[in-house]
Amino acid sequence: MELNEITAVIIRALNEILVERGLDTVKESDDPQLFGSGSVIDSLDLVSIVVQIEEAVRESEGRTAEIVDENSVISNDSPFRTVSTLSNLVKEKLDAK
Amino acid sequence: MQNKTILVTGASRGLGRQMVEHYAQHNDVIGLSRSGTGADHARVTNLSCDVTNIDDLDVCIETIFKEFPSIDVLINNAAVLKSTPLVLMKDEDILSMIQTNLVAPILLTKRMVRAMMRQRRGHIVNIVSMSHKLCKPGDSVYAATKAGLEIFGKVVNVEAHSSGISVNNLAISASPTGMLEQITQDDPDKIKSLIPHNQFAKINDIVSAIDFFCSPDSGDIGGQTVFLGGI
Image 1 (tube, helix red, strand yellow):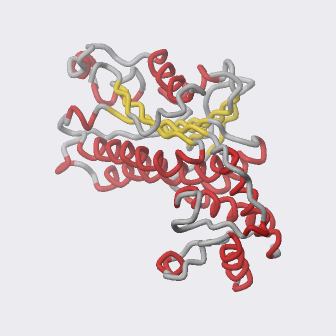
Image 2 (cartoon, rainbow over the protein chains, first blue to last red):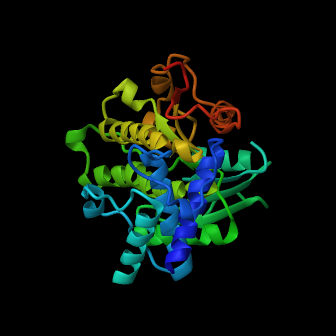
């Protein structure tokens, strides 16, 4: 999957949640925050987004992708904090395999 | 429930088969069991699957989603019971109960919750037991697996609630199935006397509770355990 496809999956999953909550949807150019005090979603919402990314990778590339590992969770500079950092993390994981 | 797709484990016999037959009247039902046998009905798909085997489980899940675009309800029903005092229980029976009653529903639930997260909806009902309330001698391992499954369901409910998924537990008093015969051996009144309502669970009571958990009006009902029989 290309970076823009990964970002589209994340934005789509995020907007599904925001619509359910009656909140305004977001665009890629907003680079919305996903994790931390400025995020409008909580950590369990983030889990569901990660699941949707992994499923999209499986459908697109026919392989499993484990986005979350011990290193990414404990990092101080969390790659989960925004849509762009998460997209880059996923791309790095896919390219590394 | 009507017009749903329902996945039932332990579907070849006993309570699982009764639930499949009931729900197939108005729903599409997938029955999982090791044998792959079960109710013969136009709206029932019986699949053979050893849910404790990860490779077998993943093949089975793939087969299911090729035929059914979504699963609305998962009923974790499959269980085995060997009622023997622990010190006399065979090690293979201990491991078999833990695998079938606890590990298998955990592995299956993980996969179904992932799919339900994409749908943004879904219900999971764990069939648990009165055994961990009664503490009947012989049921130590069985009761431990069912208590474990109950707590597992409560925690997963919290993890999945924001994705539109509920997980609840239905603790049935003994039900007249093959498992009951194993408990009671030749004395059904003995086990009946342990149940406050002094009667065995009926299929109508069981499906009524499941329907309640899965009702569109039960959106805030999750992580709960309903005990039948007055327990």
